[in-house]
Image 1 (cartoon, rainbow, N blue to C red):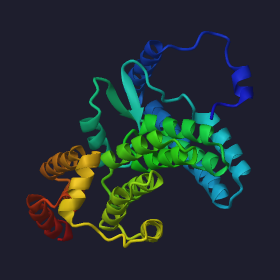
Image 2 (cartoon, rainbow, N blue to C red; image 1 turned 180 degrees about the vertical axis):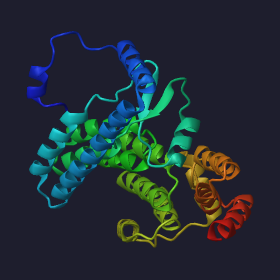
Image 3 (cartoon, rainbow, N blue to C red; image 1 turned 45 degrees about the vertical axis):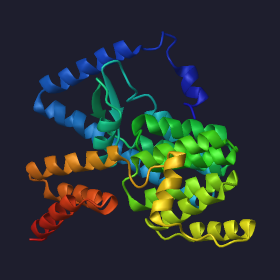
Image 4 (cartoon, rainbow, N blue to C red; image 1 turned 30 degrees about the vertical axis):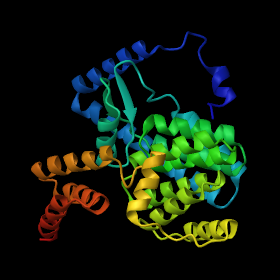
Length: 322
């Protein structure tokens, strides 16, 4: 989606601001904030906080409208909201603005996508805005607009597995099997929650079912159930049994691993994600942020079966509970 036509017509006829000029303006703005009297600085920070609060309220209203299946009304509200905030925190030649859901996502991004540019946090949840636009556009059967919005969401959070899975949904709707597999593989690479991992393996199962690779599909659906119970996965296994006329039993782990290795499918969370969680857990523990360390060690031992992380988790569990 783009800013509305009226905004475009009223825009200045000057040349667009280049990313270098944008970086200079922002540097001047940060310097002014640093040098401003405390009272003035408080007013500026308050204005940003109000912008964020107003944004959250309007986005919640639009999401509620979408939940009521009033799709055109929801898209109208979302377009108006986008018009207020679009372009405020686009990338410049010195920095890129992000909005991660938590410190672990930022750690995963830093490890998986190293960059010399400075990372700065946008004050508003752009990923949720554009994810919502994409989801509603998909419901309204506009896959091209949905994909554009979802890709915009990824510019502010490139490791959001939910957005990548939604992009996979768009690709499947368009029968774009290559795009579907690519988005699902990326989502699996960045997943650190059990439900996300389960969904990725269900997506892989659906892909291999579509192309009638029943052995891989069966392995993927069964492996998804190791992370999260799902009636969708069980229904698809029944579909496989109907089409093949034989039981879709879970393969032994050794056979499953051989099947996945042949297709380049990772078994469990990616090494990048596990190591990012481990490193963040250690840093957080050393900094005294035991709650964050606890959550990260939990990811490592529950998803990767790491005994050392389990011991650290148990020790922190006692400490956090004190």
